[in-house]
Structures are given as structure tokens and as C-alpha cells.
Length: 270
Image 1 (cartoon, helix red, strand yellow):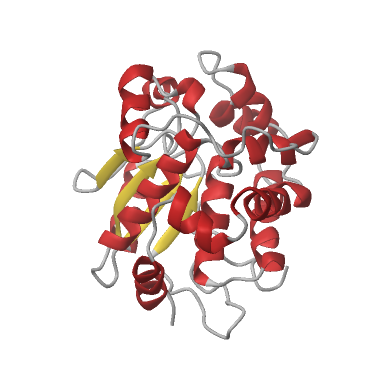
Image 2: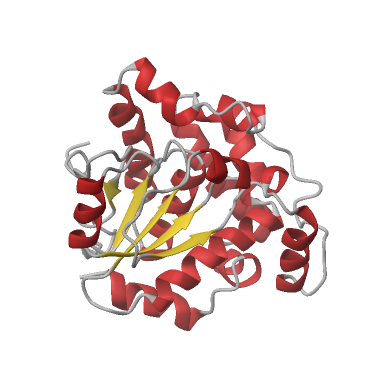
């Protein structure tokens, strides 16, 4: 993993905060540094860490966690950062009625998933497939991309994060990297890097950030599972099977136009 091992950003009190900047694409470009960051919990960020985030250029934070997680462990951010709560899991979104109404509006009032008859893989890969094919989760990741498209100021960064920086964040990072033209091999390597980063933390430190008795038990189980290479590849297989291509997935599931995808590459690649 020589291409990916030196991307941890040292911010006091952060968990698994990493750069996407510097990751190469299949056609010879690289993701621009200090533009896109992925992270685990930001609830432990210290005053020094807040200053480090601001100095690094962080201006937008997208929080994929549940409402319960954000209440129990709110992000600690510089006061001028724009914060967006964007839950990925429908089962823990908080205000279910209003959350689902946003999704129905997004998909022209259609609640039925195109993946109703999809044969999910076993284990973690199958869980990821269920999430990435869920209209609620697709709405959350579409919002992430819209914030990236709006982030046009040079030197300003977007952070997206969950609790561990592995499941919800790993899928978000994989989608971004795929949209920018990173190979599946490097996308998987970046995803698996979380195992190494969290592997350097003590068990007590991991439990502090990842275990919340008020959050649905399924989230905690996923947070404490090691990332598996088949999980990320399972996402891509599910998208190809259900949508026929990533081009159709971008258009129909995430509402990204060809111009949106071109703009992402123009702004985030060098």
C-alpha cells in the first residue's frame, strides 16, 4: 500500500482522519491535496485540533452518523465551519417522516428500490450492497457530491465522516474515487487502510469513539468489524448488476449529470 500509507492528517483528537489528496487515477492524474478529507469521529477534537482543521482549509463538514450519535458525541469544530447532518442509515435517521419525505421528493415520489430482487452477497459485502442500493443512502451520498460541487474555492476542504471512518465513510470515499477515475484496486486499498489506522489505537480508545449504547446495535457491530476487500468490490458488483453501469448509477441513483462528473474532475484532479 505504498501509494496510500502516508495520508493520515495529524489533527489533535481526531480519529482516522485521512487525505484523499494524492491518490492517483488510472489515467495519470492525482486527487488535489487539501480538498477532500475522510474521517471517523470528530467529537474528540481539541481546541488545538479545531485550529488545525481551520488552518488546513476545512470549511465544510458532512456528518453521516445517526441523530442519536450526533447528540451523544457532537462534532467539535471551528465556529465558522459549515456543518451538515446527512445520515446514511435510514433506520437511525431520527425524524423518519421528514427524512423519507426528502427522499421521496428526490426520487419523484417513488419509494420502490430498483434492487428489490437483487441477490445480496453474504457477510459485510451484502450489508454494504443493501446500503448502496437503498434510496435513503443514495440521497445522502448525492448530497455529499452536491457539497463537493459547491466547494469551488481553492484551498477549502470538505470533510465527510461517520464514527469509525470505515463503513459509511468508506463507501462515500469509494464513490468519490470511482467518480474521479481511481482504479478499483486503489479504492480497495484506501478502504482497507482503515484497518491499519484503527489498528494502532488502543482497544479502550476505539470503544470510546465507536460504541454508543443509544445507537442501533447493527451500527456498532459494523463499526467493530474489520474492513474486508470483498465489501468494496461487492458495492461495484451490485451497482453494475442493478443499474447496468456506473454511468446509469450516477445519473439515476445519485442525480449526477455528465457535466457534474466533468466538473468534479476539473476541480479535484491535477
